[in-house]
Length: 135
Image 1 (spheres, rainbow, N blue to C red):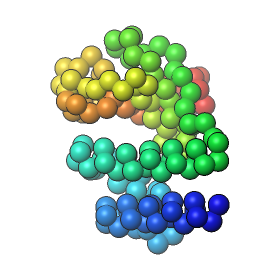
Image 2: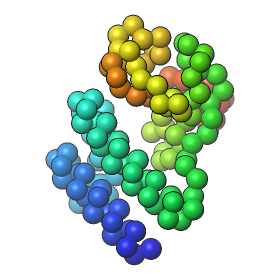
Image 3: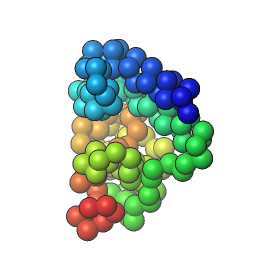
């Protein structure tokens, strides 16, 4: 477990340093807080690093992804959605489980600030009713 913790600490510290955010105590909140202000391409790279690290750790300890299916879908009704339940409930997001991409402005996804080619992702409160999963 020591190797896993060292690797994760180094990766998170590197991300925090790269984004020029505070990494002295716990870099996770600083990195997560910086993501919304990043350019879409930079945010996508950071998200891939975080997803890779999450997957590596989960596989090492045989833990399933922190996701639950969401009933229904915004606007188009076609996508299969999942809520990402890792972290505090206010940080949960809803993503398209089949990896579809936004068409940008006018996309039926209804994603705020839709960027063409970006993965669909919504704040939990935009998709889930207060009585839904974890609310």
